[in-house]
Length: 488
Image (cartoon, rainbow, N blue to C red):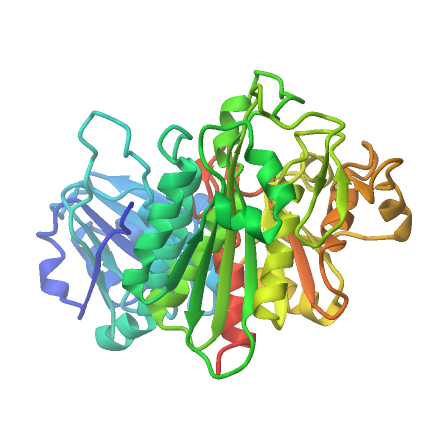
């Protein structure tokens, strides 16, 4: 997998700044305030930082913004990057500042003079997150950043604060790699193997094969994958770091490629359907994070891995399948397949683990993108307290999330003439009727959240903490939810 850049924390050494090659990074606060290291750079460059701080361009910069001084006189560095950041600026600004560094690391090394930065660990996290580069399938030699050194006061304390953030970055990278992988590489077999390898981190990993799923009665999930050469699977990952309390359950949709099946999608843009396993990818990244940081909580992650292909054996519109719960489903549209996968895995999760709460994640509907764009995930829930706890966690991590309404009128649209329900309810409120379909497989006593990440799992443009492509959305928010509400 893609490995986050290594960052070394060290005591400030002002005498070595002039000879540092590559890039040197300094922080300047409001009204041009500088710490000792920045003042040394200003002296070496004959007042370049002071002149910048007095310019209108600096006044217009927001916290975390940066500007480069290329080939400045007085230092060996090829560039001095000046970042506007004040001691009182928040976590988001500190991560944004780190991201500005991470997107422009030098092969000759990067020296970050963070001696007066109050949130240096968060700067290091932003740096690591934005330095992500998925180049597994490029033949050209990748540009490898040189050594990254953060000069900070009290480096041991900052390194200790940064350690769980480093685990979080690795979890996000794992998710991004999975979502970015092409479908001929990330088959259901390969996906399951990557998850099974996490037993080395202390996770208990179990793979349920098609025969196991058939014995359990998972007809809804198996129907989705019956037109593919890749076998359908369910992977169960358990992290038992807490006491005797029941686990929180995370369930992810893992459609490794979605053609739409017989209800085939248009050709334009279909290549993006390699990301239709984004929910499963996020669940995997969260479980990896929990193991790496030794979370004191009980969490189980379950992912349904299938491929939705057109074939002589493929599921047809009009077919009726029976779920593990026992309900029958009339398949109106084979491109509404993710909810069929989730239905069986959600029921299995409740039957086996009796979880204290359940959160499912899925790149489920285009309708949620129409409603919320690419800035917010759609949030649906049957429990206000559970939902509010998640929304607070998402806000704290600056991951956009917006609660959507649910109403009986939407549920009524799922009524079928020949079965217990249809798998779609028409175009109006498409993301809401999809949520109601899933809710039919959630027991009344189970607090539940459904996250429709169709608009946030993968972006066509850069975001603050990620280059264009997979974002890893949800790993930060779910890790925060678990840390703040489930750890003993």
